[in-house]
Image (cartoon, rainbow, N blue to C red; front, top):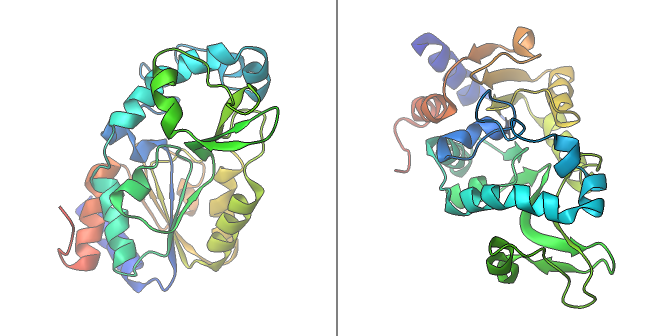
Length: 254
């Protein structure tokens, strides 16, 4: 394991344009469950299409919000972990150009990352499905957590958080920007992603086709393991700080 960490650090140290791609696994050490882990995954207790698809949301918004409410509680309480902070440290030292994330929790920004592309959206705003008005979700949090379905204060239409539900396309501008980062990079560091959910899972292929090196840090196998320069089967909150410390010579935030 130590050899793999050192090799990954060496690749990162030599890279001129390194980019990170993160998935749910980078936030599980912060207490936020992923989707598929046996016993703890978010899809263990529900059928995703019945609660987290755009069609289900329009037909039964209360079912979505009832499912989302415990997750929202968890996200609000969560703090960035050592993996988030390691990526922020690498960016601050100009060793990492950007973070592309499949997560909606905002923990990369909370850790200090500046250039973050949120492929699946975020919960900071919501959009009315009737009038199209976009609002800050901050003032709505208390009534949502109290059990109410958020409504637009302008037209009483249904408010949908600006996250990508099943059946929706990714935000075109964000995905295009992420593709450009992967085309430009000479190293892609994948952390905590199964690389199974498309189109985000296609981004490593974009990087590989332009000659970039690939590092994968994930507890479980991914479809791209055979094409990676190094695969590290380790908790990201352990592996990423270890890699960053080797790259930065111990200059990590606490």
